[in-house]
Length: 509
Image 1 (cartoon, rainbow, N blue to C red):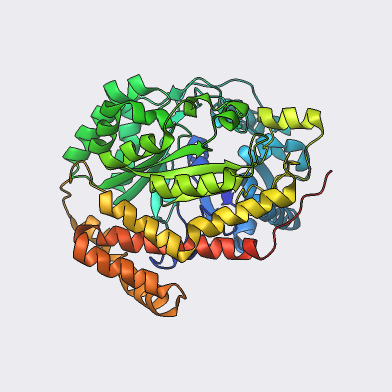
Image 2 (image 1 turned 90 degrees about the vertical axis):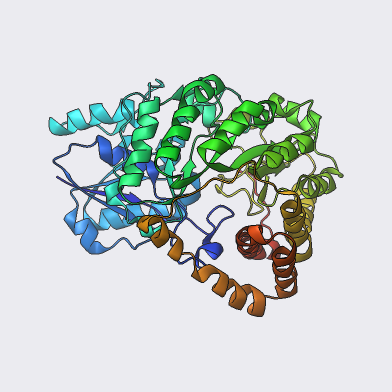
């Protein structure tokens, strides 16, 4: 049996870092972890190939080779998914589809032959059994949230690692919180299910044995959902493993703001090799936080929480939302002030959307306040919600935020303010073996490209040079980060350029 695993293309979005990747000659941020995990669950005798359309094209020869195409995607990839399905149909190849996009709206994909939804540990085995018996059905779904103790090590040998910035690992599924706008608890439940220490170390070892050296992103929606297990078992084991292996990786992940409440947990994460964490801030207004049921963020000095995590040495990336019913005319300026004062460099501000499966979607459906289908990109000025303040006022305020935090002067000043105060808790000693040196050589061209693109061609070049010389004189050890943040800023400006030309007005379904 020949199995072709296909991952559709991402458009240029905030998190695609498409405009930043060219500086380091990479094609995509991370490989498709879900498909690689599914590949490891398929019969060993089957022949498997991966086509990640973000790094290589899907060719007719690939489809002629395949007996089945296994397709997985998220909402943002819907346009590419449609093209892949049409291409498969033209080639006469049967499609097996799963993942968040198909799980959320299976009725939208009538051309897919087999829908294997929810978590593959439960739904894939019966499909494979039926397929072997020649009676595979069309829909396989479940309401069960399985234990992760049988989750396999992803089939990394299907990936050309040189084309990616970072590898990725999943430690847990589920989140103890239940924010109204989020569909994670619908997909994965509120109980945090985790892999064992051995599973985590086996996955790290697998990456290490394949000569990967560099970033590893833990894709968990809330890495600290089970703090006790992390502190008592997983992180201490990771600290020991990283020490034995001479610190080959730098880790990043996502976590809730209550990370700031646990000094011991932050220290352990840093000792284990974590360098950045994405935190959902959403809004500074307690009434809006209560509206969306994000109670873990209420009754806090959120700026102090962020600055505390930063002082320990973690770079905080932040998620923000405008468009809540309780938002007021001063919401937009408050968001700008918060981002400036918190020194969050990578601040993803988006307009509120209601994904299928979220409680917000159900509530607004009852209220008759839903419009067209969600785009999957909450930074493109679109929304599937009829906002209380009116779309035009919301779009105008959102535009003001984007211009306020990503205009060159504001952005570079925020970078300098962060670097001025940034003091990592400890400086880890990394052993530069041949593989580590080879990995770092791939990034040596980045400073030269920034000089040409950001220092000569870019209209914001004076800000780039000011930051560069300031860093050389005041914080020379942080010069690589200054260059990296300059590249990030270039990407963010490019992504928003098209959106700022003319936001799209939603129309009611």
